[in-house]
Length: 152
Image 1 (tube, rainbow, N blue to C red):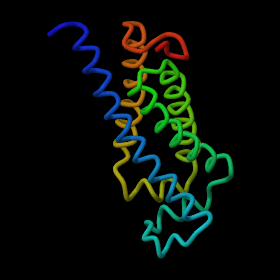
Image 2 (image 1 turned 135 degrees about the vertical axis):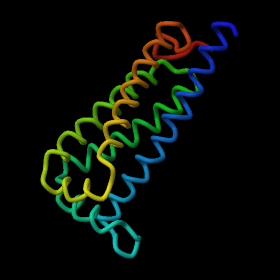
Image 3 (image 1 turned 90 degrees about the horizontal axis):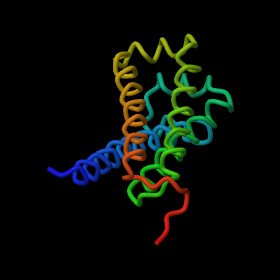
């Protein structure tokens, strides 16, 4: 296996993984919007999640929307080999982890965490950081261009 094939494979694995997480985050963002501005009960949203979202202030709602958009954008940028994939993904991770740190420190999170496996949060966040490290390595190896606009 050549080094170039390894780099291309690593990039596409990262595209799929970030893309899957982006879909998860977009779904979460849609749930937050449904709770804040729609009818969450008829949408079938978990009642414990409704309690948490109702307690969210505008800052956490903004972080939820921003990380979902940034993950989706970084997926497209990485698939198309734009250098902006790295800073956009880094912003998504910062937004995501900041939001998680804020809401996980409140008592309402304990109510919701009781119905979901808490170690899953740690694994997901560890994988997000590992993805950032892989993306940095791909950029250093030349699989992601260093300039923000790709020459054609």
